[in-house]
Image (cartoon, rainbow, N blue to C red; front, side):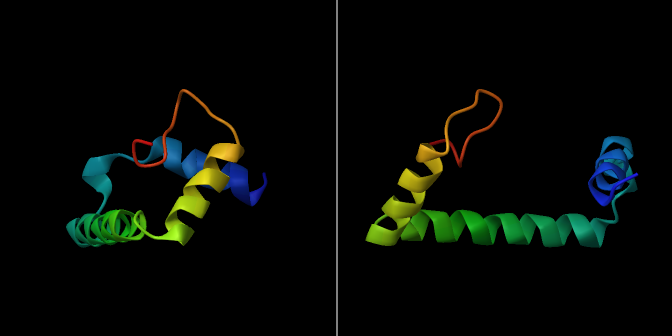
Length: 68
């Protein structure tokens, strides 16, 4: 089994209830950091360049880049 397969197997078996509260709180904080940085950088040239680069990679119906 590859490391990717092992990680996927772990993720598929993970239940939210089994994740420690401290980990959930850290993940929420990190997500808010990412969201804040994404919003703040969206007005700068490099933010637009990153978004354009992501769009150039193609589109999928199963995921979005922060609703863009």
